[in-house]
Length: 394
Image (cartoon, rainbow, N blue to C red; front, side):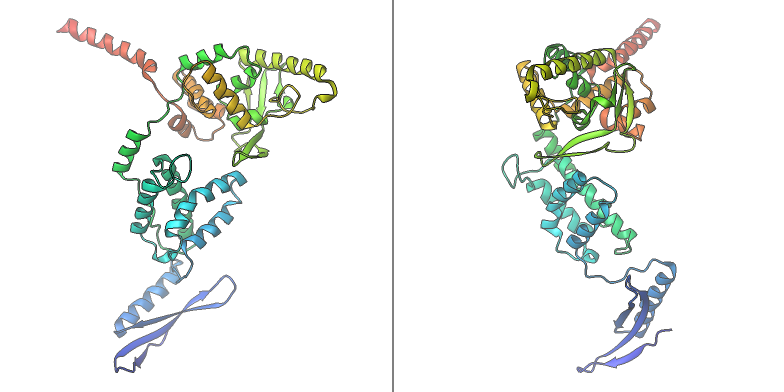
């Protein structure tokens, strides 16, 4: 049992002090905690608490590490779990947190600190794409808060803090309402709009790659597709490679986003026919260009065989949307339209998730499946029948 000493200060005041053994640090160095209180029983209580928590493995040792320093460590740890592009996205998002509360000691961080930080980010966190210092989209702030919660949860696991001060923090209702009013969400295309786009681009050179986007592939998956990934005889496509971009400048080639992302899908008839025609067209282009043609394993290339990236594909799609006088939506949002159509036409949840490259069917439906007014016509007809029966009986 740690001995408690009575000490007398220069001003004559009496205090009590003891030193408690708290184990050893990661380098094997002995850790001791000094407890000083005005009353002996307070020292005894704190000593017993520390010894009890140490015995149960719940002791939180004093630490000077700041939130910013911990976020640096957490991002290093995350490199084991996520792609380089994801780490870059996390770091860019957390810049807002570094700037506002990164200097605060982790063990002194409170829910009030985090709440004030998130409120300020929403109010004036915009850095580009408009006037700096103006309101930031709630969806962006949600992403920042999600990353901060994850980092602080890991700090709890590492016994740096007892509980996460971000766990109960939410975007305020007032900010959500303002965001909804000032920043209306761009809805994915309806089935009719997708059909109109397909009909309008049938003669376009990149008709086949765009059809792949419209059947639910991510832009990076379309850009990374190689002819060896396709079996045009069996009408199947194996998704194992992607070509994404860092900062919309540097191309990064890697395997599929997740294990579930590595999947084999059957090719619908129209997509299969379009791919066959596109391959034949590339053969003619190679013959015409002669030595000026660059051989490439990729499906999405230009007339001289030069590989195209997701920025090229996106800009090409936007140009076609303008020419067809259609409202502009992200090419990525074609996934939403495709998966909504499949779900609304009875495709089972587990098949839907496998098609999207997800492991969680509930996530697929929550994130990607939308119901518009036309999808509810059958429900209206059913209700009409019920109403008619009610009228006859009355």
